[in-house]
Image (cartoon, rainbow, N blue to C red; front, side):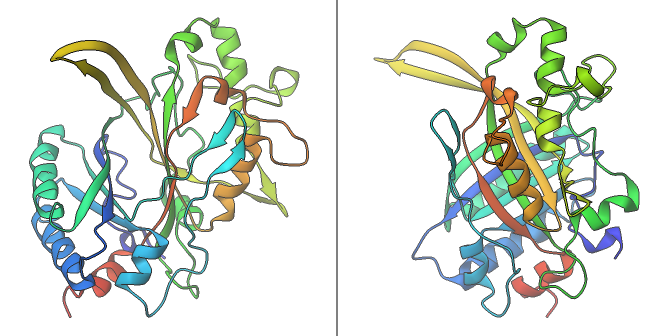
Length: 317
């Protein structure tokens, strides 16, 4: 496989600016109408140089649009965990990821998405994601350090040849809300113990310095000697939460966090990491980072290859 098989924005790491949109298709809308709208979006947005429109589908949405075949492992995201350690399932139907190296290109594309999608779907989530040049999360640590580079990413991300959906990828997305005030009260040394890396130099802790409940420890896993690595394209976000009463602002609380966006060739790579974070594995150890950041949404999708996407939507046929 080569990198050109994937949809245009999947591996475009220069695209640090993004809009992340989740939609729920209206029940009465026909499959042909959904395909027609998505065709228009692809034509309008992907025709603009420097702008990427990426589409991914839930299990039920893919079955509606393409009943002929389906990726073997695609399932909806179900709520995981219990008590204070819970990852909620908020599965939607369609994920639209607009990204670009140029922030100025995104607003008009998003307006186009809004105008066309309102006839067929209701929006469930809309976040603006912006990565700084060091790819640091709002907690100050570099995000995505463990990503493979170049062609080494391909076997991690893309479903292998011979399997349904080959050249496409499974997607996990979660909106994580940070408690920055509490986290930032920790000393730098204590923060590094939570994450498992140094803050300034982004070096993984080693030996006795690495706690078993650090984020790095809980997400570093192997199954039968194969590393459960994933490819991260997460985006920090900031959104205002305003409560208005009688025309007056009653309370203003910032909503700061990370839209965790990850891709893998198999679903097991996601589930193993999530179970280890929640302490659902045999050792019972959970991820201490979850004391300072809480997942608020959870969805699985399938992002088909560019060729399969065009075929399903009837483009070029």
